[in-house]
Length: 206
Length: 206
DNA sequence: GAAGATTGATTGTTCAATCTTG
DNA sequence: CAAGATTGAACAATCAATCTTC
Image 1: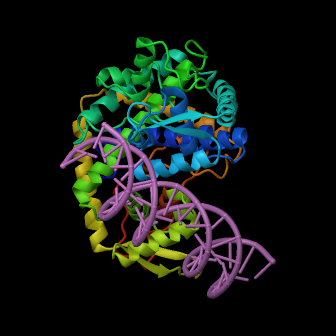
Image 2: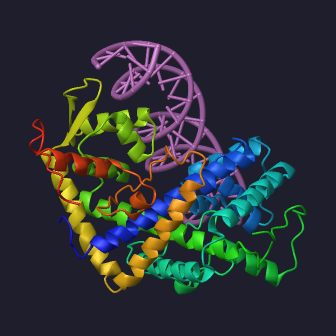
Image 3: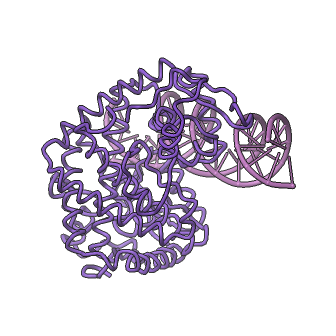
C-alpha cells in the first residue's frame, strides 16, 4: 500500500481539502472572531447568531440541524445566548410549541464587526487569486459533495452544513434539489411582504 | 451587502470547501468507520491510532497537537485506548518523561478493516472523476492554505491538521517549509535502520 | 398520541494545579 | 527550574426521560 496505489491521488486531494478547511476554521473563523469580538462568543455561537440573522428563527430542531448538534445542545445554546443578551426568544405565534428568535442590538453590532473584519481579511488573503479558477474549483467541490451525499446511507436527512457560508446561489442545493433554511426564508419573504412581530430583524445582509 | 460584493465569490468558494469537508467527515469518516468498526471507536480515536501506526509514538504534546486538542485531553484519550486494549504504552527509553505508544493486534486489525472499506468507498465515489482536475484543485487548495497560514498571527505554532490524510508528498509542507510528525518519522527511518523495542510497529502503510 | 422543547446523568473537553524527570 | 504528563473542577456535548402543546 505504500506508494502508487490508485487511491493515492484521491487521498492527496482529500488531505488538501481537509487542511484547507481546518486552516480556514482556525484562522478565518476562530482567530478573526477573537479579534473582532474579543472572546465574547465562540464560533458555534456566532453560527447560531448568523442563522438567526439570515433565516428568521425556526424550531429548535432546525437550529440543531444547522449547527450539527443534538436538540438538547441547541436548546441549551439558545438559552445561554438569551442569558447573555445576544438573543431574544418569544413563543411561536401560530404554534406555541415553536420558538421565535431575534437578534438584539448587542448581537447585531457583534455580527457587523465580525463581518467587516472578515471582509477585510478575505480581500487581503484571496485578492490576488484568480476568481475564474476559484469558481471552477468550487464547482468541482460541489459536484464531489453531491456525489458523496448520494452515496450516503442517510442522504435525505443530512444537513449540508454550510455553516457560516450561506449562499444565495448554492450549486449544491441545485445539484441535490435541496432546500435549506436560508432558501426557505427567501421564498417566505418573496411571497408575503413581511410579518409583524420582529421589526428589528431585517435579514438582508449576507 | 446583498449581492455583488467583491467578496461574494470568495464566500462561495469557502462555502463549497466547507460543505465538502463536512460531507467527507460525515460520510467517509464517521459513517464508514461505523460500518467497518461497529461502534467500537470514534473518529478521533481512529486518528490517534493512525498517528501511532504512521509516525511512531511521540510525546503527549505531539499527540495533542496532531489531534488538535489539549494535552490533558490527549493524555486521557491515550489512557482510554490503553484500557480498551487498542494501544500499548511504555516509558520512553532515553527520556523517561516521554511515552512510547504502539498498536496491538486488535487495533491493527481495526485499522486494516477501516482502510480496506475506505479504499473501496473512495474508488466508488471518486473513480469517475478526472485525476488531473483533482490534482490541479488540490494544488490550488494547498496554495490557498499556505497563504492563509502566512497571514495568521501564530503561523509558526499551528499544526496543519492533516488528520487522517497523511501525505507522502505534502505540497503544503514544501510551500511552508514545514516538517510534520510523519515527515520526521520518515527521516528517522532513513537515517538508522530501526530501533529495537517495538518490533510489531512497522509503519509502512499509508 | 405525536411533535416539539427542555431537564438530568454521563462523557469528553478545557484550564489550572500538581507530580515527575532532566 | 524547565519540560513533560497527569489529575480535578468547570463547561459543553450526548442520550434518555419528561413536560407541553397540537
